[in-house]
Image (cartoon, rainbow, N blue to C red; front, side, top):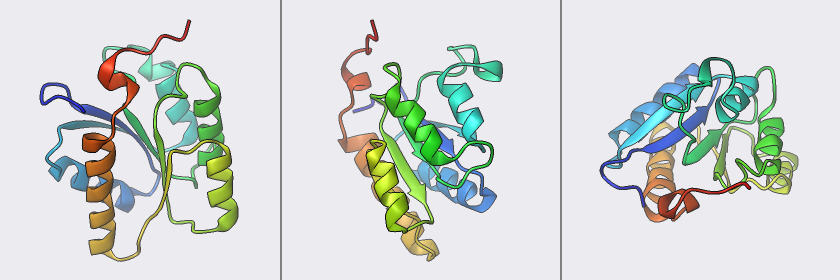
Length: 156
């Protein structure tokens, strides 16, 4: 569990401004302290994770505790981003939750074949979407134990 001193670092990879606003607002209203880093495309997500370009400084771009990843992204798809995260020794331990509008079986299979930790379909209904995000916050930010909670991960 995250302590009350250290906020959970969330990398939100979402290009839809309405979804972004709802996700950020709901997670910020959650009782668990968090810091949300938002990027709008797949290449920027990898730049953040690999600390490239404007994200080069680890002090301002800390490794996230969790990645919330849309599938339909410009420049590099969510599935491509997921593949990169889960094949790198430096990042494969980070939980990746796919949060998408797609309920297509092929997308679900493709995400789990690339080792997604969870796959959530965004409800159309505002209340249901908000409830899903609250439940996501409870599980992934409060109840779930991660390696980063106990010690830093060594990649050597």
